[in-house]
Length: 323
Image (cartoon, rainbow, N blue to C red; front, top):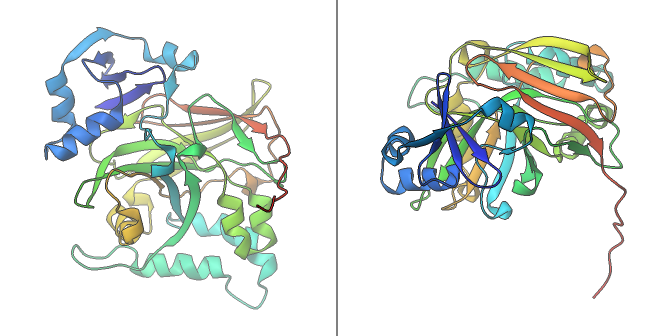
């Protein structure tokens, strides 16, 4: 089952090729709250609501009517975060970016990757090694499919990162509940990151997009997708990307544990979008994206592709006024 969110209000459920409005539902977030508070499965809550008229999901996406699949009504209570160096092969691109900064031996990226290979897949009930972790921002940075991913005026680069994201709602008791999974573009500034690994935090403070559809249920173990960049309608770069636990050095449970072990991220009612990482970057192949380029990410099992054009923000006045 897949869910999509209309910007104007309304939820769409797609089962196979049949996409219909969910009766009496305005937001996926509200449906998730209903499921958590009733200690029920989200799919059962949706089924009990029932279904209305059929819709053309692809047409709605093309006309810009779909939002990210889950959005918190208060952006300050929605967190965008992620983990890196979690996929088999992910160290090669990152190591090449950082090798110039560490010529004495193994880079910090390679050390972190090796730690994940050795300890990122613990047995159930045991704790594995913690992954690289980063913060991207609040729900203010959640960009709807089709809308521009805006690079700050001071950015040195704006590049895609094709990933899978887990979406989570925190219940009244502080327990995290997984709503589902979605395609994500974890938009980053790789040129800034390459200057020095300690600039990673700066490179990640960017918007992100995810969706258009939310996969409700288990994550496939072997996900095979395609990431591409279009310039003036022509593909200038295209490459397959892999995800799912068969292609990862960490289990999803291990990544979730090391995020939600912090009480800060277990506040009732909060929404979390946590991106699991990638091993595929156009930047690693020497691609420099330009304003107007379109990022496109797709993978079997996740429905419609995620598309976003690249834009650039106007320069902001950052002068601080004393009170």
